[in-house]
Image 1 (cartoon, one colour):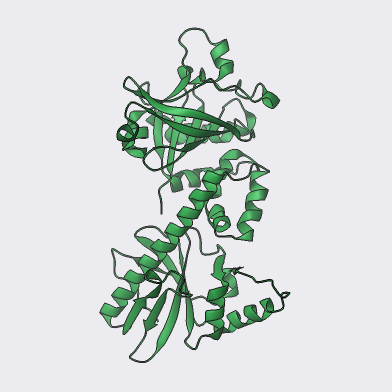
Image 2 (cartoon, helix red, strand yellow):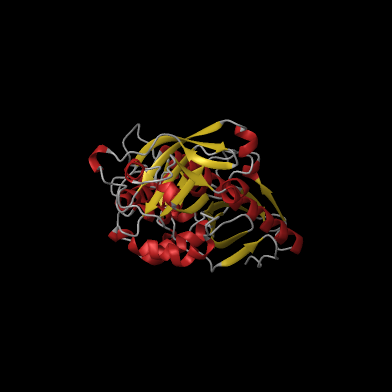
Length: 377
């Protein structure tokens, strides 16, 4: 799975003057920028950035959420190196006209959660502001302080966040509906929406209360979903290789590796004469996430002469995945195809989403490419 580039920044007094309200109301040293600690921003998130921009700068689309329930404030700023320091720089950040005091509540010691997008250099960043003095932020501010507070010092203002660890932290807080930080709970819902899932779109509308999904975020979700699909097939290929070595299947072919429009992924020869078609349905999320099946796959399932099996891979990562198998789904595929046949002339369904509990799946077992897989029944 593509690693998200998340970081947590504890705001200093000089960071606060990036906001026009604090610049105007703060005495002494002022700067129109956020400092970005090199040990995190460069060494961990964007190691090739010094080569990429040299003495130049990277223009970044900055989406600011919070404090509190405040929705997206969209700006353009720059990331650049000044002397030895990397900074998020540019014009002062003015509060939007409809919320003139939006950033006034921020204080030294508050937090900014960054979600950067881009490979060699940042192309966009979502920044979630968490203010101790904003009532709906109190719980997450306390949790961030308890979990990460010990990592900060006068010389360290930024730490990298591990996606799943941070997601678990947010999940444990039960933040109120509509709180922007709940976006980090939407990763698997976004995956479903990126694959055309109605359930994912409906869930996002309900959770985000009109804040929507940016083009950058949606594009990243699509790339991540495609990557998970590929990883699932790679895991399954390694799994079948092991089964073949053990003599538990006679042979197999990874069909979709060379034919991207194949309506199944693998052709498995269980003995010298028996064939089964296999399709990998992979998700980074839990087993219960909807399964997306194209019309081409449905027709192959319903009309093919060989049994067609669905292999549900979930919690998929680069070296690991859980697996449950639904064998020979021809009967239910025929029911679905027949139902779709009554659509008006000229109307075609391209795909369907199926809840896993509609199908009869085997017990769960694990594929780990560093270990021997369990035997296939």
